[in-house]
Image 1 (cartoon, one colour):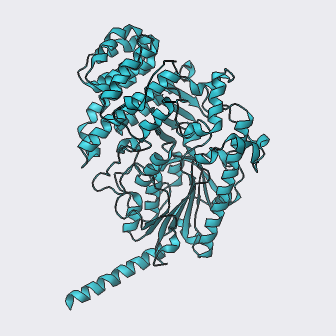
Image 2: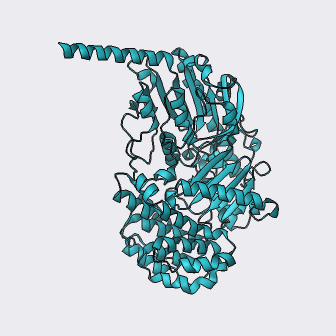
Image 3: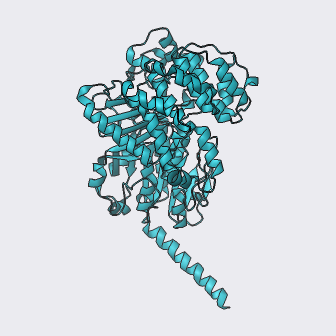
Length: 615
């Protein structure tokens, strides 16, 4: 009898708490449009499309002039959103994932913290995480999910809604479609970014994307109307934003502003205006990133932000808008996208943007099968090979500098590299040091090549994060330092590279070789030392040595790379080999004879490379 009374009392207490939470806590609605940078909404850019429903939201809310995805692709960006943690710190930075990362013990995806506090959490419907979903993240996640499905209508909710109409695939049309389907937006009226050739194909592609943004706007209006019909509009914070940049050529998958700078507006409900330290219908200049979004909802819900999260709330009780507006830095990263490898890190501070291209010998235009389904991508490359592009438009298909500095106030499309400009020498060093400090202190797990990172993740599955950041931190910094030799004048880097090439640790040699590849013909004096690495027991060292010798035209790469393809038992090693085969063939003109039978270990991404190479 005593036990029964205790149970009944517990349920009454829980019911009271739930009712109290519903009355005193705001609801949250996230509306995401896929592959959408800020450049395509007139609310943010004079050349963008009219979006009246989205523009209406900040009339009782805020427009964020500087909101950023930390990565320019779906799975990495969404994993960052849901965890509040930088992806290279967690090991979730590769798209598409070959290995799903376990969240460290005690960590949760942020909706789980809301759920634990009595919120109904629902998602309609895209997840696309590179980490294992933690328990209680969603009460429901499906194409039918809605706040309307919660069993207790007084329960506070967080609902996440993704609209796919602006996804990259919407621009995978053929020539017949372009010739026969007119766009609502006049192709002659659109602004063509200076990085693109001004052709009918590009104009049609821009116009078609403007149409898609306007479709998104209509759907936003319909969803907001549902809230209004339910009498919940003035109890619900509405966030509208793009899930990363895109999707015209050279944006999605690239850590430039077109790939990272997203639109963000927040409608503030009348009932909870006291949680926002500024008047409505205001533009916020402070920088906010995806790592901040989860902590912001946790703060608005009146909860404590977990210490492991990298982000800081930009709304909520006690959050000063003066402090938010003082934030002026955003960190970005790009790694493997599908079958295409690269490693780029960026830091924006105010209007200065610093790029660190760790594998600068790779052109941005390196083949990615999914990207090149788009006619505009295909035409862009064809015009390059025909010599019909100007220097700005052609840069996409040529090697990059190891580092770049851009003044976005005067160069919003990042076309003029100021790294060699004496007037910016001091600023370059400052930005280099700031980014380097972030990469080292994070620490950035991409310094371990993906095959090594995956191997270590499997080996230390219980808590890989702790293993890397505590036990492996010093070694990781050593590897970063080797890669950064590419930033020195070669005369200064040469003796350090010579010493590194003798190191017994393969990781040190790998990054020294990567720096040599960035130097290219400047490093020809190291040919003999590098040639000796062709006999290394480490496959990745042999790979990088082969690439360098191929760049300086001192060795035919096929025999060496085919040997690795046949011997490697790890598909990620073969994927890196095939990435370099595409680079050496398409950018440097080497010939390769390859069949699927030549590749011992395969994965979906490996097959994509083979589809392109074997024709």
